[in-house]
Image (cartoon, rainbow, N blue to C red):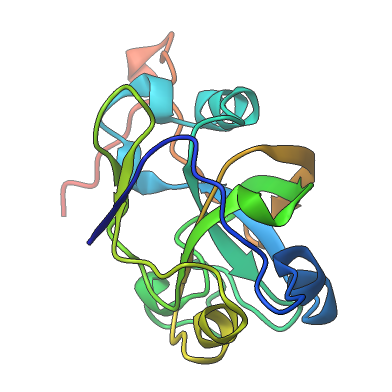
Length: 181
């Protein structure tokens, strides 16, 4: 695992541009609303995406999504949600203004977590070289993980069918029906 101090600026090597790489591969960077944070309403839909839009200076986990990718709840092409190209079906699409925005890339989940309030993150990802970015797309068998900061939100992405975890207040408990079989 690598620990990156915030702010971390990577160097463009041999003219390689992460942003141009994503464009050439028709890949979107998407931070998904997932069911993994269901323990805290602050991290449930839509609050989780509202928070992600505001946290541009904090490193967050993103997936790269290609035009041929499938979401976790697409019953026609995905048997097990964990084998899909994303853990969530609704997310924010972002653009990166410079190559220093991407801190690490990995062809799988890199177990990224924030170490402390300074913004340092722990990640099993690699620095975003051309070879590492290519591996992150070409070797993935499900979702991948890119750690990104200083991004600009440019839209909302939805895999069909959309599925999110949201907190709700049920006004009439009689509406709850349980199968007793």
